[in-house]
Image 1: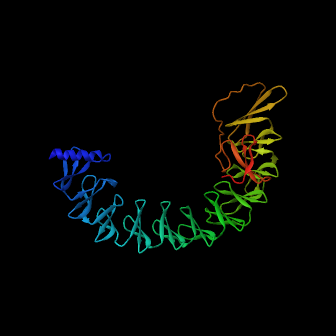
Image 2: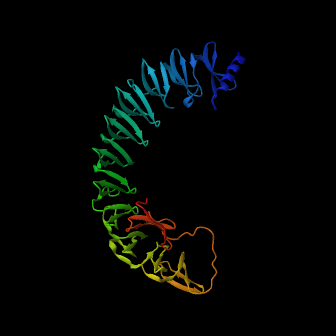
Image 3: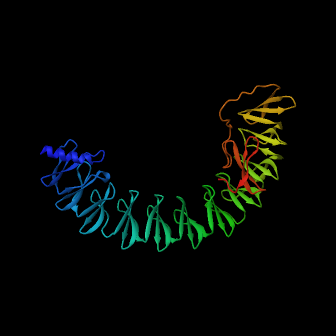
Length: 452
């Protein structure tokens, strides 16, 4: 008898899955289980035992009823059903008196009889069809949506898209109605903003179902995490998520992202700034706007560069061909192709008379060319960017250290500033290009309509 059991065991081992510990064996027309050593660990009392498959479970039959064994041979669903389908590790569909229902491993009913089709989503939700319509319950049997929809789907593992007729609606994962079935199209922007198309126009609701943008726009596009651009009959509007309202409507020609706090406005090919509640920070009168620090901006006005604070208050008057971003508390200024230095407060501390200036921490090396040789001057500054010393050397040796020359000092205050370059707007071409930060030279001519 043991030899025959071992022979059957080896047959099952040949077709077993890795990690399987028990195998069905037939003895005297009944089925039991043996382990890999061929020892009988489950007495032969079943009419049939299937293969151990999904979640390590195996169907079995005893006294005409179907139940379920786990990978250790324990009965986790008693054999009292006509048929059984494993849906998940915790729930199964069982046929009782000719009808299907869903139960958990404790025998509690998750979905009662009467459904005709079933989908499991994310091991958390069950969509079911009853009387030709779809509803939803969770894995604990709580009703999320009554069976009243022609179609349902699970979007982004968070929301339920519903269909009635040809119209779409949206439910939260708890069943709260975010949008009734009124839309021909729905776009989920984030957890708190949902765009919908109604009667060929776009609007938006929040997670509570409040209409925060009326359905009267032809198109929309996110500019940043804080701003949404809206289009209506070629006129542009701007919605601020931070202020939760439309902050500009039909007044400007375009909007561009600037930072988390500010948005660039364009009117007649001139640029300005708004804050996230629509207050004017800078009037739209500049060729270009770049960050200087968190409270002031490098601006190009009619071809000359300066620095201004909010409400266009001047810090550095418009007299330079280019002003670089701050490096610590120091900035390069350029005039007539020569470079000087200005500090954070706007004071010119080194006149623009050098062919090249390299800033390293609180020191700067400035190079001046004459007809015979280079001349090096070294400047030192205090924590406020004030000049504390200047030394000149007529002959010098330059030692180059390999590796990236990283700017020290300020974090980026704008989306357009990269490590060594920055994007810039050209009003002449109405396009964006790329320039080198250290000297303002153009690397890519203005070519692009948008930069993000």
